[in-house]
Image (cartoon, rainbow, N blue to C red):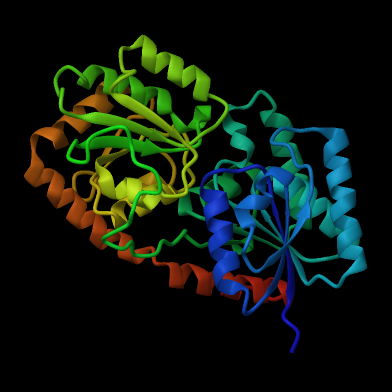
Length: 371
């Protein structure tokens, strides 16, 4: 029996979207045959996975010429071969993916990983709202990774509740002994406080750096680490140097051994200004890290204040520094939060996420409604 064929569409991404799609490809390829339409520079991310790669130039922002070209390239592939479904990840991939699916009359599923195109903070907010309301007619189903995103789809875009399925990201239980691919520039015994994020405005890494600057003299034996890359890296490195953190804070860039780095952290910080769910927070919980995070979006669903982590107001480095200091000063409380986080993360298991995703695929392909 032939496996249903799925065209997955993804824009340039270094964070949760990429991790999520890799998990789907690795675990559902026995059920579905995948082709991934992605920017050429992302092809290496999916190398070795059970999927064909269709290189397509998909820029992060609106680009009429490139968007039209990408739509035509995908539509040509959909027309030549019998695809059963298009699965687009995020607003930009959903823009070009849904147009191609509409042209070829192929069902389309869109997963919303965060505030669509960060529309709430964009100067083009009205355009994004108008575009999504129109394209929702071409969308057979939405998946959101948190209940908060489902509520936002209904409130901002007028999407009907029955058109939305909430499927939180799941994570695998981490091994206790994960080796670092490349050593960090700090002694092994030196406690680390860190964050993992794409270095973009909505991740709020600036506030982590400012909090670290407030703590560096009070805790001379602590080091800080920022894992990830992105458009703000140069600006953030300059801020770190300006605040006297050059020898105390390490920018690792993009790393494939994030799990091992999380195992090295004494405290994990998620200073986001906007967050659909926070897959790295789940990974940090699985790594037995106590969490300090912003009280935004889906993070408020993962963390119960004072029980399995600490929540602070977004964009407030003073609160962030105080919360980190509290955990550095009280090892027993810090350990308690980590233990409760390790229990809470079991609700977000990979198997459940994959099973629900598989059900969503079959229901969209068959034109059915999810219960």
